[in-house]
Length: 287
Ligand SMILES: [Mg+2]
Image (cartoon, rainbow, N blue to C red; front, side):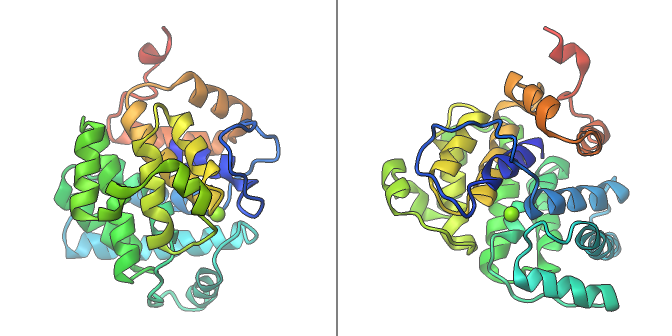
């Protein structure tokens, strides 16, 4: 989740001013949280309120109700965070009547907010069930559901010790065969802005697969020069689970200190605390 927020913030200044290079100031003072971060936090809050999750019809229904409340509250508090037009309209309707249906979006909005699911679910079945529940309240198109599940699954598998090779195989076999044929330089050359899941999520996963650190994954995603905040958010979210499951990196620590508001840090810590994660354990971070 921290990786998602850092990625979103790093990418925020490049979303509409794409750069095609990995060389840029990653601690840009103009960086800010966008909808990707705010909605990731909304998902985290909703899931933590219902933790431990009841993976049955009633439990899932309660989570969905909570999510609608959290999304509407987030929209009311941060109206200029950069939501997609359809999400904005959905919030307007949901504010009037909480009994609001999804809008069949195949946008990458489902995948950008999904990272807490990858941390909270305890097996692959739970990843799938929870990812579907969180995503389908707005993004019930098969491409958006697939994208969110792919990202959540990647995070879950990464934090359970899967190697890059294993992760790549799972992604290629079960979600995005095209990843097998990607080439980074070619992507940098050809990528343009698209918020469609199918045009942005597999590329973001690939940016993680070819990285050597969380920071590197985020730089890769920004260098695509496409949907920078969302692709960096997704790449960062997976990279965090892979590289920094049990320990803050120097980069994360510095980013937290310099760029991230205390209440955001608090929520991230609460998630790790609830799931029994070692990441913010002082002993792990005092070497
Ligand atoms: Mg955004």
